[in-house]
Length: 225
Image (cartoon, rainbow, N blue to C red):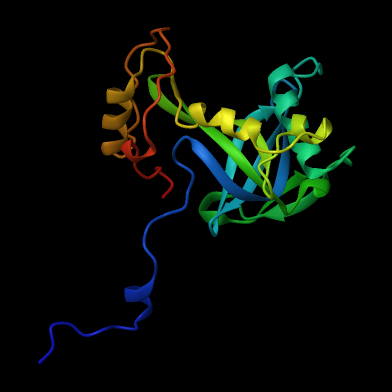
């Protein structure tokens, strides 16, 4: 008689958990393809189809490169420029058409991608942001910074030929920051996630905002998981 017997069935040996990005932090990722999108107003954004620890996923809509009038969006364009420096790219060619599995249930979808930045390994700092729109809580992954995967160098360190690492270390005090807007707070978001992100629970449209910091472990899986 034995206390337990080992099973080699695939369902019993498969590693559990999920590698979807669902919390603030720094993520070693491979940018499989940057996807260019244009809003109804005419602004251009770059979404990132990435792979993190074997999990392919899309980070949508926060690298806004131009405004509706075509002028550069200062914040988005600056962070995108960091990516170019880290990639060692002086100029990016116009987008080309490709198909990626980013549709519903990972269906193939035709999109415009930037080939010069495909298959690029980076460290990507994400900050979660929560707000309210039409009484629904909105969850966004905001890209705050990129670092070179091989040595954690910032774009500034690369351009100035400085020893890599100091900028990455300074960033550590921000890595768990989360932005709450429209009167939301940690308790409201924790409850919303525990309830599996229901719609219509955003309450009113208060304008208070905060950006406190708390650990990743407070947050569970995303609705898409």
